[in-house]
Length: 125
Image 1 (cartoon, rainbow, N blue to C red):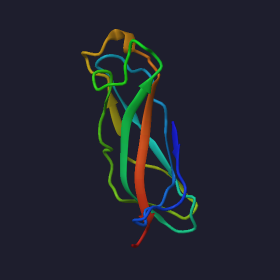
Image 2 (image 1 turned 120 degrees about the vertical axis):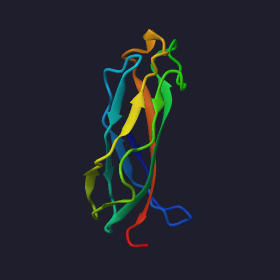
Image 3 (image 1 turned 90 degrees about the vertical axis):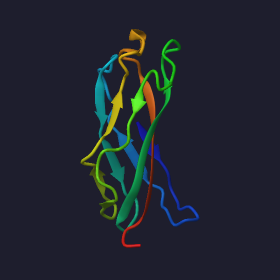
Image 4 (image 1 turned 45 degrees about the horizontal axis):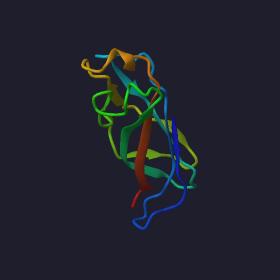
């Protein structure tokens, strides 16, 4: 899973790459952790300010992309986090994802599309 952006917004936030390792082995009642890697494409230190994730799709029609299928929790690490110029860092924290016990067993081992989003800015601002 990879999310890539480039440029800046009107608030001075910069766009960069976030990627997460795929989670496997989910079934009703199971929790897994998405480890996130941040790539800084800039010649300055990047301060990651926020990190969010959400379920946006599945590969099975009988397992819809809803909170009944998967709960995506908040990133559990420390923010802000600084990435060196042109650096790549795997964050110490993770994003917990839980398939509720009440989810249909048809959702076990379903491929889940999870969107990652974050904001960052030039460190020291």
